[in-house]
Each structure stands twice: as structure tokens, then as C-alpha cells.
Image (cartoon, rainbow, N blue to C red; front, side):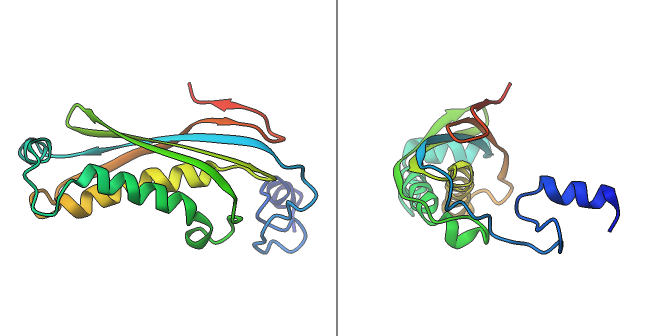
Length: 165
């Protein structure tokens, strides 16, 4: 193994620096602290479909409230979806879906008191919220696009606070 590849492996916590194999990070010795993460994303929807959503005219019901619930549920199930995520005692999840130009902006805020952060839970909540809107609206708009899913804020933990610019 080259010095460069070893250095790369040492920086990635999910890769064993000696063997290069994938591993789950051991957080057993880390203290439990209050942690919070906020993620955002966007779903672009055609004007005609937006009019139907905003008029409450979809046969499947309200896609926004259904999607919010799906996002909350997804945050709680992240460790079952993402292979190396730790199951966490989530204390709070809030998912907001707000009208935006050409679609909806989605924001998820997740909180816990644990030995590791909830960034993946917040990102998963946003992604599943958007996917649920897509599922409920696809009969009238198959060209919707989901994007700009990103972490915008994180608090707590050894690495400290983060806020996107």
C-alpha cells in the first residue's frame, strides 16, 4: 500500500486504514451529547401539477402532508436504509414543505442526544419527503426533478458546528 492510499484511508472513518475494508465506526467510547442537523432540498414540479396540488385536486389526497409524514418516518429508519449508520434515539424530527418558485423547498431538522450525529437522518428525511411527493404526483407530472439535497447546518459532537455558506 502506498503512503498516499494509507493517508486517504486514515481520513475516511468507514474504511479500515490497515485492510482497506469497509467498517462500522465504533462510537462506544464517545460521550453522548446533544446534536442537531438540518438538511434541505427541492422538488421542481410543472405549473399544471402545482395548480392541482395547491387546489387540493389530487385523487391520492394531500401529497405534502403525506410526504412530511414519510420524511419523519424515514429519519427514524435511516440505519435500516444506509448500511453503516448507527441506530439513534431520535428525540425530534421536523419536516417542512414550503411553496417555492416552480415547486417546493423541503427542510428537515433532526435532534438527538447520542454519541454520533444525525446528519444522515436529516438528509434521508429530505430525500424521502421529495420521493413521496414524486410518487403521489407522478400521474400528472412524470418530469419532476429532485435536487439540491444538502446538509445546511449541524450542531454538537467532536467535529463541532457546521453551517453551509
